[in-house]
Image (cartoon, rainbow, N blue to C red; front, side, top):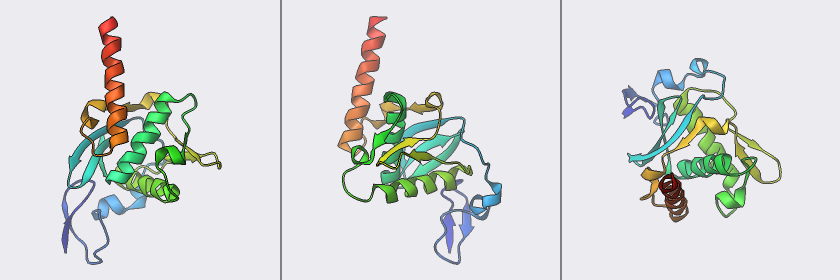
Length: 167
């Protein structure tokens, strides 16, 4: 059965019916073991997925993974040490499962083998990247389906506009 690779968009044959990536993007030996130099939270919607850039490589995430990455990125940029409690990411009991799913989507799409997040073992998580390497395109998220993320993006844009008006 022919499919489109989630990483590069090329067609590939998948006899198992389970793979989402072409052969070259599934191979773990192609992965680089280092943290990315940049992550951009873009937020464009395409084929039920949302875009990010990891080292200028496009990676498409599910809505849930994108939401988790946005909140972890926002916390890394705005909170003193970058930690966010799992209940502030999303209520319920399955946050750890979704955080690991997010990590796998990022690693599979970026070809990087890195520890995406840190855990303090008390229910808080932090994105494992220097805050200076993160950029969020808030202007693309003002129509995002999740109310909390949409509101956070609108608030950030409002603060940026106020700061620009003062200069």
